[in-house]
Amino acid sequence: MAIIVEHEKRVKEILEKSLDVFVEEGYEDATFQKIADKCGITRTTLYIYFKNKHEIFLGSIKQLLGELEKSILDVMKNEDLSASEQLRGILSCLVDSCVQNSKLFHVLLNYLIQLKKTGEDPRERVQRRVIKVRHLLNTVLIRGIHDKEFKDMNVADMNQLLYNLLESAVFKIAVLFQSDIKDVRSSLNLAVDGFIA
Image (cartoon, rainbow, N blue to C red; front, side, top):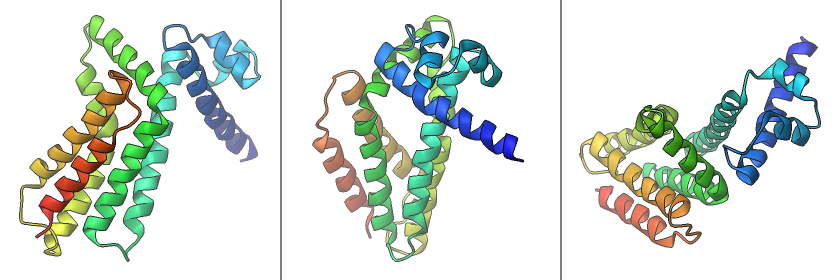
């Protein structure tokens, strides 16, 4: 049992430290050796845990999204909050994460461009990674409609509006290199105001 726990702990540490390497070096210039050096292990040891750099990168993103999902669930578990308060809390978590991980978004942008060049569909990859977050948004929206706090609107359209505004934040961070996205926060709050019955 202790071996499994130690293995999982080591994997988590590697994924966390490798994100720093990807941010500092970019996806293309990050190497197995640089990741191993950052983790204080040998390349051979790193191969025990991961097959290649791509697997580490995707694992790092998945771990980061898992932590974000946990933050969202923490907001949703607070039953003292109304649906609109939960929704605002979730949106705030998402925007804060975008700002905190701004350098990572530059790396992700380059990674997605490289995927496109190889003929893969980056949109499908992104949608697969954010499906849980979108589902959690749906849950709060449905609750708000059920509780008559939100207007009886199409949940998919409500979710898409919020998602589009969040994509705007990512675009401003990754492409326009803006760190101040107060306008996105204002737009998200305006959207939530528009949902309230």
